[in-house]
Length: 271
Length: 273
Image (cartoon, rainbow over all chains, first blue to last red; front, side):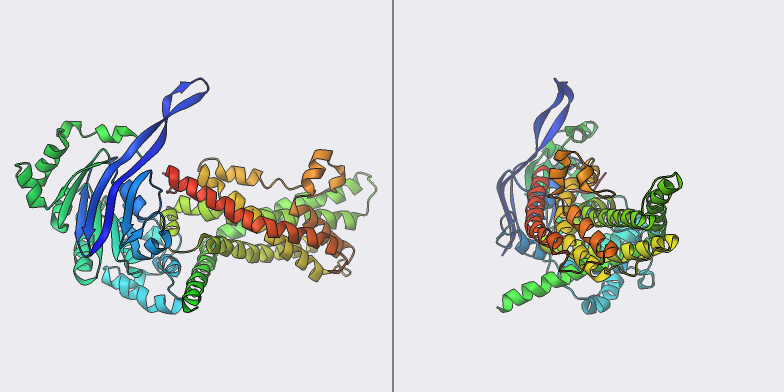
């Protein structure tokens, strides 16, 4: 069964130029995604690699119903992402690079708020929240502490708990380990592996961490300047580009050298 | 039928989540709440003392009546501020905390989300306004024995429907312009006749006042408190409020929907920074 099907997906953003034309700054269209096509089978974990500004977050936000597209199509378990938003929203949840919580509220209060939107009652969350926090390795005794008192790693665990609390069948992970210390990063990766093995979830992992992509994903895609250059297993990618490492394959696929890798940050594309 | 009941249940649970979150935020920001209340108190006092000041300067006026008129204007202004601020925070606060993407990708109907915010704003606003009114009235030893507080509350309740509708319209502004939206929301509150009769305003402002629910709310509440009018006697102010409310809520939802689509089209449905 196909979990995600994306066909010629296109998204552009309007950006103001620094130079003025008369009183107004000129606007230009900047492509964030250009004719991206791929599919993900149910239960598969696919990683999309790309540097900052390559369009990874735009892809995740389109699939999360937070953006409207400019062309092409996207379906999640057969539901049109742009026409059947409510149906898609029930199936999807995400973890992004920023944990994003009400900082004065506790983890329990933040999780309750998120759960209510997915139809979970107070009675249901009372038992479920401590259970899920324990599962992600969060010390349950701290569930009433304000989020602002928790470390970045702890906050990211609560973010994982928020995503899992609603039992999503499609989990969108947008750089979930960026900025974490090595230990927290390892714990989050282990947990993703565990969820994938034990939970009937399909995972789309967007990252610029090549080792993470290789360790977690069945297939790895390279997204460069809004274009999906390839989507294969890590071994197939290395073989195709005659590379020993995924890093070498990445640079061979994009056709640029390491020294040129600041280019995309300068594209000004909404990441 | 079962499907509709399940959907309704889902939406009501979502609505309870909005109320619960707001209550948690009030609890967590308790000291801020206290500080803002004291600020409102001081602000209101400076306005209400104007009546005594004019009298002391030799002006001829019924001090008790003028004080009560100013008090009603000041507390209703404060109430409106609270209602609009909470509704504007539907977007602004979530953007500031960074939770906006999680909230707006959740399967909750936007009307339910906004109505939840509106309900909380009204309940919180009424409690805060009642306390503010009581404390200030205590400062001036006002004789309010003849006041009809039930009629005043009925007028405020009916007016609140319109205020929620207008609040929904202003709530969309931070979605369209993250930088200026909130300020525009406050400007859009331009309420007329708060501390004086609308008859003293220029003609064009008087015309605007006829479509402002605050005009009818203030007049109805003043009649109820100052003159002891009952609900029947203030019906002339209640029915326009009902009409404005019936128009304002669907219009507010429609405008918010247009703003949300605009934000999704242009990538503005995202956290600040």
